[in-house]
Image (cartoon, rainbow, N blue to C red; front, side, top):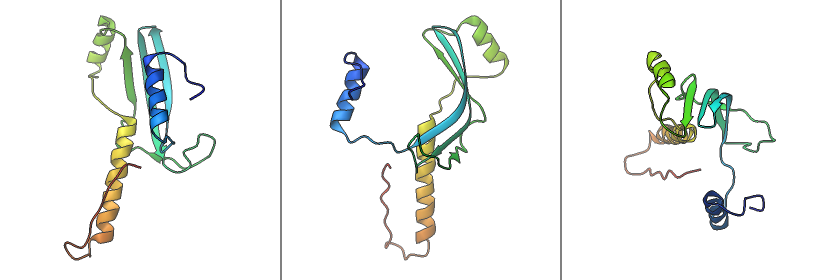
Length: 139
């Protein structure tokens, strides 16, 4: 909190979260990124080898990351301050690249919950009906 800027909406929101909640790292997300900037209004990034780990999430510690299977082979992010320039729209259209939504953290969390459920079902598949219960909650 001492390193946060003193003014601005985002700094205020971060300060409020840090004062209200116990915040600690839960997921380490890594990927290889190539970044390109055409100007201040346009940034294009290409992310590959998206992976995560939920143990040894400290940046200093080594750990074994799990590849994010649901991730595309290459994740293209186009960030613009305004509308797409015609030259970029033409290139993306000719390559059949269209807007879509993808969240690295969201996909990791969904995989985590599915794995919890899968393990729960495997552990309880022989239990008599009505004797098993489960409570899934965030990390």
